[in-house]
Image 1 (cartoon, one colour):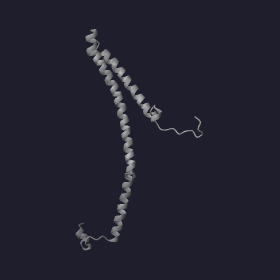
Image 2 (cartoon, rainbow, N blue to C red; image 1 turned 45 degrees about the horizontal axis):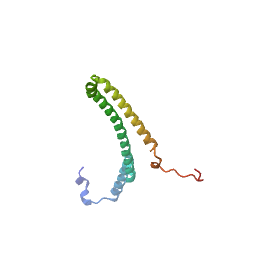
Image 3 (cartoon, rainbow, N blue to C red; image 1 turned 90 degrees about the vertical axis):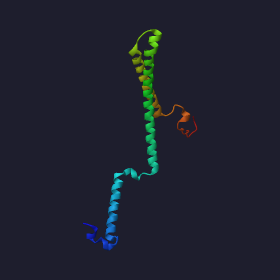
Image 4 (cartoon, rainbow, N blue to C red; image 1 turned 90 degrees about the horizontal axis):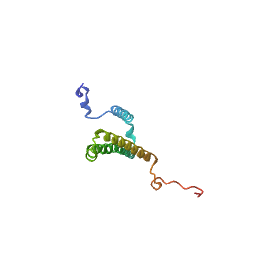
Length: 144
């Protein structure tokens, strides 16, 4: 049905009080539905900022750990490849192509995993230097 058929031209753009109340009721209902659908919309900007900071910190830790693991593997494999390709044939006259590569690849992998474990433990327990950690409160009785 068109607006002309309903007779809305005679109101000249005015809304009746009943229609205004119905409009307010419907808009309030839509607002409640949106709040229920987006629970994080009620948080303050500082809460969102701290959440973003925490996720950035976790991402930084993950990238650091993965870089340490990959770095150990690449360095070990590179040393093994260099030994097999250049050093062994030219200096010792022995062709050991896959042997040194495999040995140093495994050593690099083990070193990378060891670095990841050490870094993970340091992240978990904090720095080993006591001056860099949180201050510990003094005893109440003054006895050391």
